[in-house]
Each structure stands twice: as structure tokens, then as C-alpha cells.
Image (cartoon, rainbow, N blue to C red; front, side):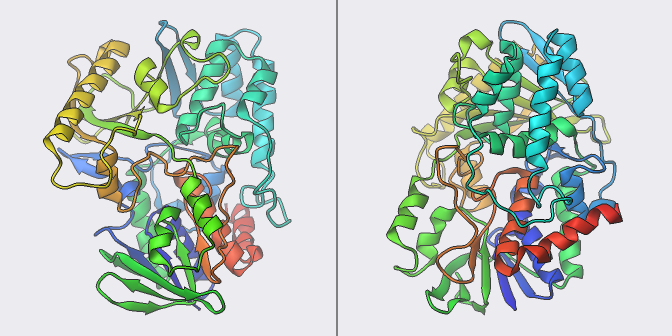
Length: 490
């Protein structure tokens, strides 16, 4: 069967591999001149900035991400896998705490820093592990087909309330929501467990990060006979409600026949790609009403010994500066109270380390679209924002003063231009407990949605989303049989 995958990110490449291994004729279409631009990252001044995979959860031998890498046939090609990345939490009241990776290590660290919290932490992590083990796409031991996509397992804050953690520890656990850009007051327990849960079990990376993953996936695609067409933007998806998808038209006029189409971009793009009437007005309204995560300002810098490359920094406001219940991490709160994420990568040959800093920002006053060239007012705003963020970080981490150098910065407009079709928000659709998620199947026969806007963000989210979409298209057992067999191969 002819299948076209639109988008060459982690979701698109995973879907293409799974489809090709089932014997389908697969073509991946990507608007950018190179595959997976966000996952690949970029180079500046001889340093690689890993925008797509600086570290991930579930990378230990039996971890969920490690298992899926095994399914895709790329695990053995990734070198130097580490599993012991730690998080450091610096609060504005001067308090500093650490959380390592590994369930028992987290419990021990919790008890050591917050006496009496060890037992509640153990119960909290057990609930997370149980949720992770409840889906056949996350646990090879589960033999039934997936269910509960629309389940309501409660709000994250309800679980935090029940555990009764001290304020600083609660804030530390809540900050994991930064991994997918949703405040704890709006985060579902299910999503928190699926995204943050693997990071408690293990956290690490491998040499080359996202770029290395893209390289081995491209090689796997080539071996599987998948055609990868780069620099080819899609102009239309041709279909009808009876026979379904039958072709994809590129902007250069090329028409490519297909029987299945997997769309991994933002759902808001569908209206311009499909003929009027193929999608019901209610469905289009649903897409238009999907909440977006906040936009972000990203700094890219270099340092030598000011930061460790096996730690990430969460610069957080003190608990009394946050709302009592919400532990709000929305854009407005972050600009006012200074919640910032700082990551330091592995050193280059000359000893320099790449540093990335991320601060969510309100997007209400940012320019619409992607104007080029940039206006003078925008350039001035960006210069001021970069300097303000630099000073805020140095105030919280004095050791960086004079010990790092800002090389570049990215705003939402940068993201829109760079990854083609992004809305400018950090993670696209905001997966909130109150919003109805999109499902992979659409009303158009043969058209399926996948990616972080459908399931959840991150490398693991993209992989699992692709697998679920392929499962809906051709039967879940066709995908799950490989996943179930991966533990035997390991």
C-alpha cells in the first residue's frame, strides 16, 4: 500500500519505519532542506546545540524509550548512553535541592533533604509506575489493545495534595510540567505520568544527542526502502469522504498518489490542505479552540567549567511567590517570578560546553506570522529580552558571571521560520485536562494524525504517537508484536 508521511521529525521517521517494515511503499515529505530540523539541533562556533534531545527519560536498559529505540533497530547504533542525569533546583529564597534519576535514588534524596517525605515519595512514584505500566504501547507485558485515551485520571494537583509534600518538594515535582508546558493546575495525572514518569526512572542521553538519533534513523529508513523527499512543502491533500485520501500535491505541482497519509504537523494546517467540506465545521472549531503552550525565549551560549554536563538547572521562584495551589508556571508567571530551565551539554574537543536556557514568555504582544526581514522594533525587543534573561540567570547562578558567553538566541518567530509551520509556541498544543484531545483517525478515510500535537511532546511522545497512529491504520497488533518482542531481543 502506498503511504505518505508528512513531516520528517521523530514522529514522521518512526511512522515511516514501522510502515515500511509492514511491507508498505512509504515516502516521507519534509518542507525543510534537511530532516528533523528541531531534533537535529544546529551548530554555532563549533558547538552542537541539541534543541531536540538534550536529555530524556526511560533510557535505562528496560526503560520505555530504550525499548522503542530497540524496536526501531537503532539502539545498538547510539554510543555512550548515560542514565544518571540529575536535576538541581535553585529557589529565589536561596534554597537548593537535588533530585537524581532512578526510583530508589529519588526516594533516598527526598528523605535526606526533606525528612519524612521518603514514604510519600515512594507511594507517589509507585502510582506513576503503575500508570506507565497500564498501556500496551508503554509496557510489553500488556497484551490487550490500548484503551483509555480519553480517560480522566484526575488532576496532578490532586495527587500532590494527597501526598502532602513540603512546599519546596512540591514545587520541584510540579516543575516537571515544564517538560510539556502545562501548569500543574491544568495538567492531568495521566499526562504527567507519561511525560515526567520516565525521567524519575532514569534520565540521560548519548553521544551526539538528537543529531545522532536522526542519522541512525535516516540510515534505517534507507535500509527499509523509504524515500525521503526534503525541501518539498505540501500544498494539498486530495481526498473525498467515500474513497478517502488518494494523493498529495507538492508546492511545485507534483502529485503523489497514496492510499494512506500520516500528517505530523500542527492540526491547524489541515484546513488549508484539505478541500472545503471534508472536515466537519465542529471538528475545525475543535482544532481552532485547542489551547497552545506558551512561547519561549531560548539562549544558546558556551562555557568551560561553570556548569556540569550531567545536571540540569531549574531556577524557580520560592513557594511563597507561587500561587498556593497552582504552583503556576505559565508564561506571565515565569517572566515575573523567574522560572528558567538551563541545560549544559557534553564538552567539545576543546573543552567548551554548549549551554541552553529556556524561559517561557507571553506571546500576546509578539508579531503575527513570520515577517522577513525582521522589523527594527522586533530586533530591539529581542536584544532587550536576551539581555534581561542573561542578567536574570547570572543573578540566580553567580558562578556564570564572566564564565559564559551568549552566542545566539531564538524567539517564537525563529521557531516558526526554522521548523516550518510551528505556531511559535514551545510545544504546540497544550495537553490540558480540560481539553478534549484529538485522535489519530480523522473523518477522511486514510488520513491519520500523529505527533506532539496529538499525543504528547518529546522524543518518546513522538515515537509512541507514531506507533499508535500506525496501529489505528493497520491494526494495533501489527505494531505491538514488535514492541512485545523487543524485551526478548534485549
